[in-house]
Image (cartoon, rainbow, N blue to C red; front, side, top):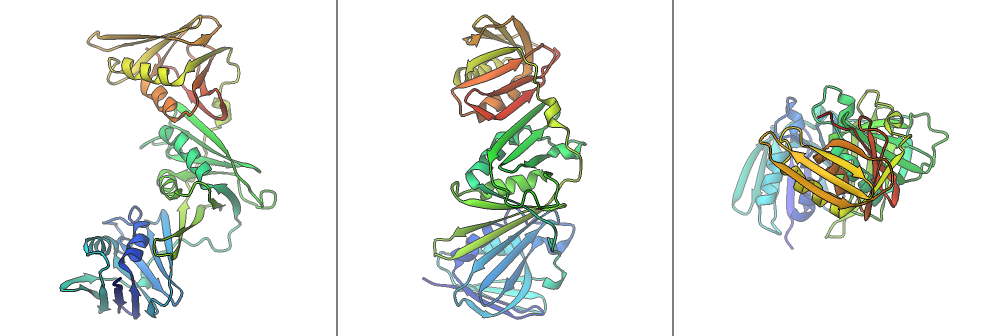
Length: 395
């Protein structure tokens, strides 16, 4: 198998011999972090640091930073560091033939990349100017959690995260650390999602760090993408201003690669979600999840395109779902359900209910209500660790 040879000569000399697939695998972890055009030009570059034992690649947008550490076994020829335009390096590497050999030389902030008869000249910048997020010696609260559990929590609450809201603290995910569990909570002001999964916090009693932090949407999405090994444990570190995690992977070549993600937190006060969860519900309906979802989707076709409102009428063991739009088109569905309380009719945004049932893995969904003007609690009948709150619509 042929190798890639990379040589850098900015102010520091760096020379590396590496398989193309290994380098490309490492760069892939940075592809969603490094922006093609950034107001700070050096942040469009990837920082490359080479030692005898590892190649360290760093990408950042000042809000979130990913550091990729690739294990080396004799590939380092000359240690050093530099920064290279990420997108150009990434696209060139992807376009080269499999098992290609790359030779890269740099001098006077110009990098010459050669592969067979192909040549590319790229401008580089000094590694000394690259800004880094450094946790330093901050007090840290550590949480150990299975990747599968963390991904489940993120997936169940992602849809109710606010988008482009002036209440910036609603555009992230609240993470609440407990002794033996981790809660993820999101809300956009119209609905709320809460998922609790098991975890371990070995220094819960001693760490002088608040147990509630708001992680930005981009950080949550980035972490969620990395959760590809459900049974493996990931270590989360909560600092006063940052959230950090580290994961190890095995490449096809057998080398170990470590990915460290560090994100700034949203500085704001998340609403007291416990007060939003209705506790005095006296009307409970049990509905087949699949039938409910399909009925909602059909009725929503003829609902108001802007409001997406549908009305749910609960009577003895029966649910009637009605939809209507401005053209006076109408849709009606009836379902047999488990309901033994007083009749009640509530209007909801159909998409809000569809988003909820899409996350449920239970055969039945439970809706807990009190009045037609008050919020409704929705949960899987077999899973009390995940709950949803949705506000009714006034139509």
